[in-house]
Length: 445
Image (cartoon, rainbow, N blue to C red; front, side):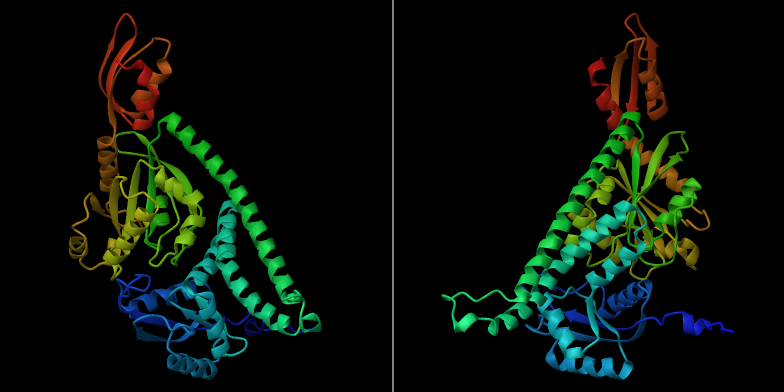
């Protein structure tokens, strides 16, 4: 009779990870300028990312540098020190808090020994994204980012192999000055071609997704629903807030990048207007530009919104720095001019909520809330309503009597100041979202 295996035997052990950070001094190109966060705090966030990816942290270290070492990124002495830690702690993965060039990754894997994987912050985030993508769109965006990240690394690795094999692959020592193509070079070209073809295919599929989303947004504009995009640092509580405001059940977890795919729900404001709230992917410091580009289809939900609801975790010790990172990303995608309401979330975790909120007092249109307990949510919706109304356009239109649909639309989505019936039709003075105002231009009076 077979015996049942113990839980310990059936569950695969988690890989053991060692973290490496660099305390940079400012250098001319700005790529490795000092972080807003101390290196210890940035490593703490990297540890959260690693834990989200399913890794066990067994140690960490940091080094102060002026600029990256040409071959090993960190100093050669530091690389030897880490190699010793890798052996002593039986490390499987060494994770760097900065993006590594392909040559750095290759040399570090040599230095740390066979079987040890070297990963950078970007690669780690991509792994997390791959685990958390729950829709076809999300999976495509992650796959695109992964291929674009891996392509130069694949090229570098195969180039070295190709040159090594070519060295002994010349026919008779000379072929008119051109070496015979070795198997390494052939494989490199095959791999590069296959990946580039897949990248092109994914981009075509994502264009279809973008077109579909554009049609959905156009339909929402025709219906006149204002749209509010929830943005914020990862794990600030966007999905929890969306659930609290709508009574829905968007996936929530206390981890970084728990949700990647946009989710849209209807919310009725205190004045009765219906607004569409869309949850979007969370931001993080050092978010690579290529990764932002890969998620263009999702981030367009932000660009097309009438209002951004910026969710900030005020219980976090670096709430201000997180908010700055979000604003920097918004600027990078061209959304810096959109109106913003700041939801200062998680006040239920604070002994003195007023003091924490005072620290963020320079942010306009801010409301302290707890998505978990519901505190401040009515005030938040009041603020959203007020800002949306301030962004509305004033209209004066004369609508034919057979356009009762437009009269109803103005009443449902706008604020009517005056309505009179005349011989030619219904004269209305109102304030409506710009999307509706655009539909009424021909009826201006």
